[in-house]
Amino acid sequence: MIKIAVLVSGSGSNLQALIDANLSGKIVGVISNKADAYALQRAKNANIPTAIIEHKQYPNREAFDDAMHQQLSDWNVDLVILAGFMRILSAQFVNAWEGKMVNIHPSLLPNYKGMHTHQRVLNTGDLLHGCTVHYVTAELDAGQALTQGVLKVAQHDNVASLAKRIHVLEHLIYPQAVEWICNGTIQHLENGQVLYKGQALEKPIQFCQL
Ligand code: GRF
Image 1: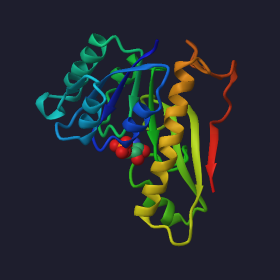
Image 2: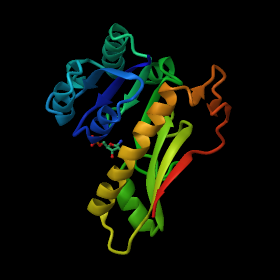
Image 3: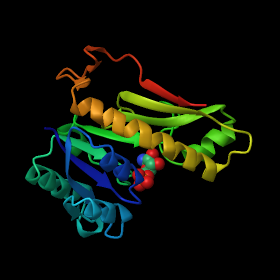
């Protein structure tokens, strides 16, 4: 059974969706870089071990990443899930977990990497918006996309309403992508190629909520 660690910084609604999904993998631990993250409470409620690794306590990013690496090794983790984890990880850390670490990002990647995605979508006047589960690589929000949730931007949408609607989609597509990794439907090969049901995954599997 695949052992999963979830990295969080905030409310942890995606963590909750993963807990509720009864994955065929096991969430063996949750790491937060913030002591007051509500996600920690969610983990405790589900009897999942937690670790607080505060970046402020470490002299630099590498030392912080080493501490996280150590905790993940102690838990014997196979798969790392970033769920609202608000720290940029060192290239060394990311490379060590290549093909074994995924993230969810609130945009239809490759559009709108980085922050403030909802505002940027509204500024541009896009008709579609969404979220993407992708493998994590050293380049920010640039690893291969696995699943996407797509929605139609309504005329009355604002940043708050989009954030709310995107969250609903995230809670659908993240557990699905993780389950596919756990049960081998999605595979990441040594050469970096990603397979879905044994075939090269050319583009992300899309779920729509129009
Ligand atoms: C999500 O919107 C996700 O796209 C982004 O961080 C947010 C985390 O929300 N990476 P939550 O803590 O899971 O509620």
